[in-house]
Length: 486
Image (cartoon, rainbow, N blue to C red; front, top):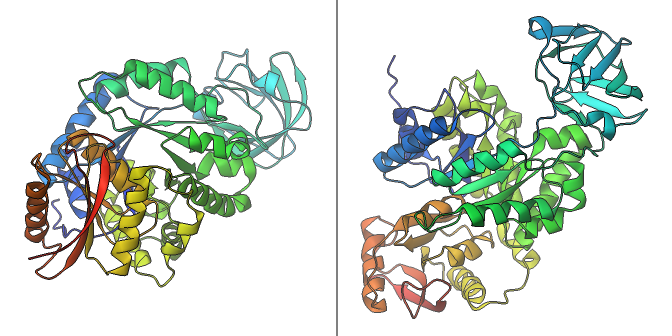
């Protein structure tokens, strides 16, 4: 049945990330989602072949062209599979007080007594007294003893266990590397299809991100001419302990609240979310807040009030983006979920609670382009400018402007489509293609005409513009000007 949908663009500064899946993988629905407010599409590399991801990238780019808005693509690598193996008939029902064996050497189908493991090193990572949490914490096992490949446990609560469900160790301490052989192969696919960001799962230290960056640099071709940014998914206890170093080694972080909550406990996550967003802004990196943000909309056309508050609070915390997982991948209402999320973001951004007080927490500007970005934000606030405009080759200056939580739209104009896509994730930044002239004055005239055509400024409105004396040169932003529209 064809639905009549309201495709009116909902203007919002906080960006929306949606996971691609069966519910959202057709060009028509993607186009509609982009038109109403979608900025970034996440590919889950836990599933699919190289050809599958290549075709999905083609669909996203086609939908983007049809919608007239470029979006970024994130390749989310699977990371280590710390899971139970296959279970007979797909499920067993464990009862509180039962004994149950996790056996790394067992290759048969699981039963009431034991189950195999995808992660063969688990017996080396646990000791008597450790708590293992399966299926996102729905089932709790206490380790009684370790005997070779076998982990003997006591079931602490009655619950079903299904095939391939994940395992976490309370308090962390699993030794699995962040990048597996599968991830390294998937990274080659991601680079080949021209993704804009790569998300690294189960990061424990800065060295995980440094290895990923090395692999990206080795695998990137000049064909795409802009290397994808790297996102560290914060979902392990060790990542919290090494948070500052991980953030510095990354372009951005994802507050991955699902696995993180299993390791640290649900109650600890809200405060950690605020800490992570604040620290990332201070260190001039971006953040994505993820997991169950609009979970009820998998099956319902409207969210719960608690979900509305969750999204709004992430916006007020200063996150760059909020993310949808199953809601957009397999849910019944992917379009409605994106539209609802855009409305929530827009409303939260109008709140009295000002984000501008985060300025004092940002590391001091120590580069010319950082100083120019800071000055542009300061000037725009003082003169009540309608817009800030950045002529940019690399996207660095508009990104630095976005760190200040300004609620004045930042129009980032570039002649490089790869840079345009990459900027789609930055809070408050509206990336646009504009083939500006090498002559600066001519370029600024073109920009003003462009803004007037789009209805951003009218005659008499003030706007701030940053540029470089040498146009088309990366890292050359050194000029700040204030203009009044004619």
